[in-house]
Each structure stands twice: as C-alpha cells, then as structure tokens.
Image (cartoon, rainbow, N blue to C red; front, side, top):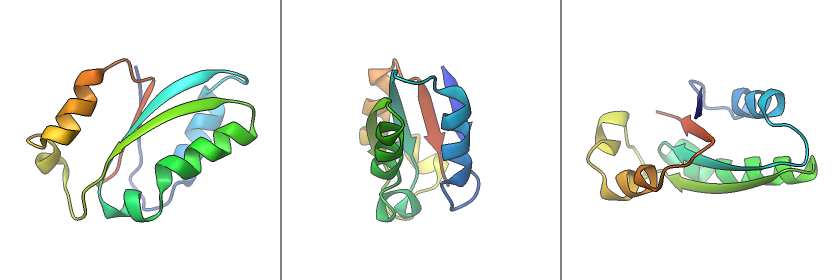
Length: 95
C-alpha cells in the first residue's frame, strides 16, 4: 500500500503524488482521512475527477468529520470501518 501524507491545506501535493505514481488507464482505490479541510473542499471528488480527466479511474472513500485530529480517528467507528475494508492503493492523511 502506498501512503501519501498531505501536510498543507492544499491538494497540490496529493495531485502531484498521484500523477507521478498512478500509471495511465488504471483503477485505484483511495481513502481520504481528515477533517473539514478535506470535506468542505470535496478533495476526494476533486481528485477523482482529475484522475478521470487523465483516463484513470479512482474509487474514493472519505472520513472527514469537522475538527478531527488523528487521535480522534483512532476511535471513530466510521474511520475504522473504512480502514478495515482494506485493499486501499493510497491513503491520504490530512490533519
């Protein structure tokens, strides 16, 4: 599993990492774990659409309750359920 960590509020680092890692015409699963910076900006859908425009398909899922920090995700059943699904090609972490 490849892991991409986004430290800034911007999606630029995520998009650059996906662009250099994802080969054309492929399908990948991406899990976004974060807070309102992820959800309000609809980062998962924006990334999915960008990949689609390049000919790739992303299946995305997200757990991004407002104000959450990483320690809160450790006990959040929604986040844990998504992690337990496994088989993610990329996990994007945003705090």
